[in-house]
Image (cartoon, rainbow, N blue to C red):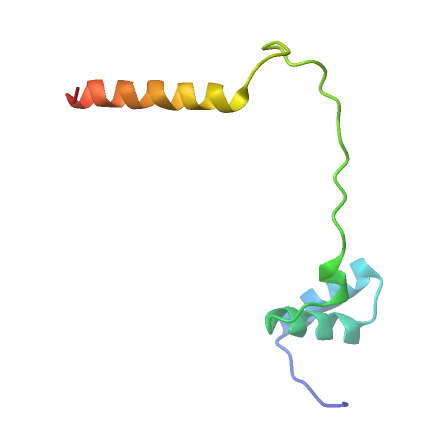
Amino acid sequence: MRTTLTLDDDIAAQLMDRAKKLGIPFKQVVNRTLRSGLGENTPSSQSKIVVEPYDMGPCLLGPDVNFNRLATELENEAWIEKLQRSGGS
């Protein structure tokens, strides 16, 4: 649909900058921005995120560390300290 739209100067400048950075037409940037503002998904917002794994080497705590148990023990210690400070038993 062809229409005339009056934009504030600052908004027009931001849209033009985005079009230039992305290397896409101004019309496409306006449509994407409006879709995003209206809560609609656009093909560009559905792009996949790729996470590259990084080997951080061996665990410094040893090979047999149970992190769930360690977290529970640390939480328990924190609760005990909190109870002791507040006067509870």
